[in-house]
Length: 142
Image (cartoon, rainbow, N blue to C red; front, top):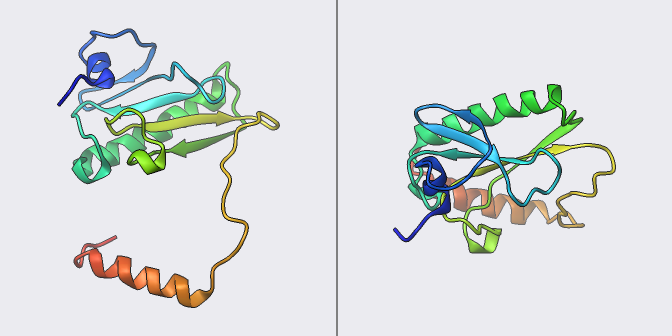
């Protein structure tokens, strides 16, 4: 593994403004926030992608995300809503290759948003893709 800035934060070798820290997970303020109060939740075990992430670490990532999202609403941020965002891979916009969950506080008119497709695909296309994905799950319980 080449140098990972999040591993450096975890090791205490890089500056961070920590809001949560336990044996498995850390959460700290994003230095390039989408909105005021934007923070990152990061597993302490390095995993560059979701396929490498231990499922227990993934579960903890979202549990901590829920906790800090609730705290954002009661903090000086006064979030009216919260978006979770996780980019997995270059095409998805991942820039730091250590899995991390963005917790983005939202207020009316904050200017942040995700834009989706303006059209709905035919049901046959959705069914085809669903079957393809289901076939790759290998019988795993979802």
